[in-house]
Length: 93
Image (cartoon, rainbow, N blue to C red):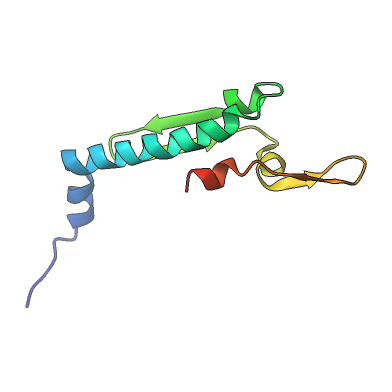
């Protein structure tokens, strides 16, 4: 009966070609998020909260602005009208 190495996923994740592919994909996705964020720079706080991290195996794009949920998905303005979100997170998917 065939068996798989229980560490196969870790071995594959650390291969140079896999790491390069993950980093390249992250850069592509990060550029899409950055483009959406750059178009919405009223104060610059959102853009300054954007962080792109390329690690040895994993890579992430994160936005730490405290208002990101309202900014991204939309919210009600004080006068009650709906303000559409910018959907930056979805741009990176």
